[in-house]
Image 1 (cartoon, rainbow, N blue to C red):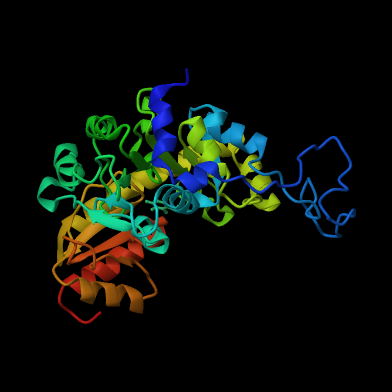
Image 2 (spheres, rainbow, N blue to C red):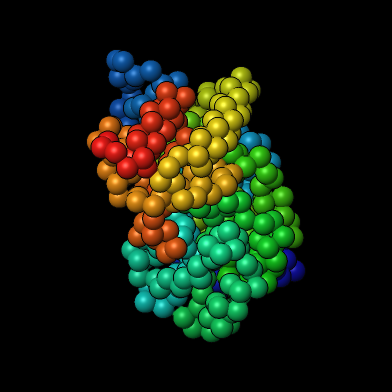
Length: 371
Ligand SMILES: *Cc1c(COP(=O)(O)O)cnc(C)c1O
């Protein structure tokens, strides 16, 4: 008999995706001469890659998957490598949500891509806000009460619950016990997707260590933030092997470029990984200095504690500060359209020089003088 808990996972997916025969990409047999993929047989002058850009890259490259599995402390069959975690979000919504029928649940204020991916797919978005009065903490029980009725196994189901930890843009790490409680309560009814784009800056353990007991858990990781590789477009979805196999059917066959594959492999060797950890430590130190300095600036109402590489800052006059920063060449993220953040800006921790410039402008803007 197959594991009953896991059978539930595919039961939640769109039946046409479960039954889909995936595109048969050219066989990957590196030992043989490639006369089967209509590629040119010659390498092009100036091509600096190892494998040759004239060749299609390996789909779901074995070595990269093994590297990411070891980086994220899981098994290779639980890893789907994708073009950033943005692509993973899109794949999940496409595989699970029937247009005009199913829904996702998000906890705003949060990352915008979950709702955008759902809208593109024609899925409904249920919103259970994180409450400012509770420090934007996840309250599993309240969330389950709000969305419990929808996840009842009938038609028009809630399929995916997206949470982000540490949350963007509030910066707080969600409580592990609450996440585990939520995942367990959703089992067999919906997937719990935990986006850990900033977890390295929290110095906390990934929820992936609960994968064995939470078959409906999906963890999203990315190399874009802590590893400084946003331009390489590489992220990973960590989930039960049957879910990884299902999503492999809908990810484009040659999603990652050969450039990205080779770059990520060389920049995740032990030495660059050690350097990455030092940069994360430097950002964490700078975050704490910036947080203290901002808290003392006139015009700043509140600096929220952060477990990420940015700070959520509330101002008495956020428009004034945003415009002053912009005029002096500094872009920060205006998050005021999000619930409970009417006077907040999200500020990424930069270099010492950038942080000093930012502080000078914020001080001047808050002081009431011309800026
Ligand atoms: C930046 C970010 C991502 C996207 O990361 P990519 O891997 O670059 O696509 C995903 N989730 C959150 C919360 C982010 O802030």
